[in-house]
Length: 238
Image (cartoon, rainbow, N blue to C red; front, side, top):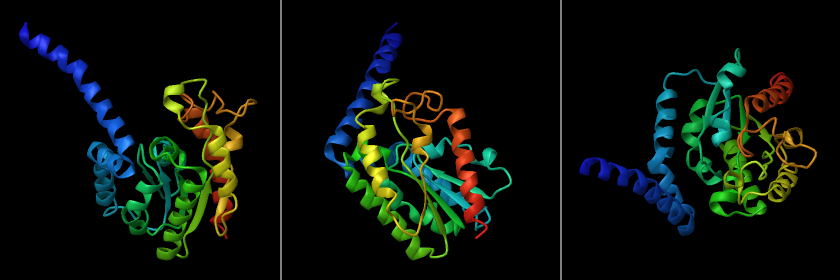
């Protein structure tokens, strides 16, 4: 009987402890938060990528980003192309910059498809200008190490707080739109404005294309795949 009581208490206490750690990490700033996500998956994903890199051919297409990329079934949807999924759930521009060696340079990709930034608003409390600068830094680093690699820069996707405010906030479409307005000014990349394709008439993430207002539904990924494929055909034949 005592064992059952203890187990019941643990079930209640462990989620509270995890939530507390998460909140403390956010309040302490990006460095502390990075230590937190490293413990719960970031490092293990990077280590997995490092091991996989030993066995895959080089010169393909890297999909680089956060959970939206991680959940993108690129191997099935882009069958016939040499692709690598290098998305990590919860990642930010800061995280991407920390793992460029493993996620990009080691693969010597022909193309990098970059989608990052939405978590910067929620985790790092960044402004659109902050995220824009960080994305520029990522692009500059790719250019420095892989000058012949082509970069397909996706607009950051919209959100829909009407579906699940807890998942979406504090991100707003106003922030995301401001960031995308800046991203489209970056030279020497191919900018793909998928954001407008994913919006409904109210300017929010169309419920047809999202699971809960932040992440992408299977139908949404099919739309995104089609949009990317059109551009890939163009940039990979030049």
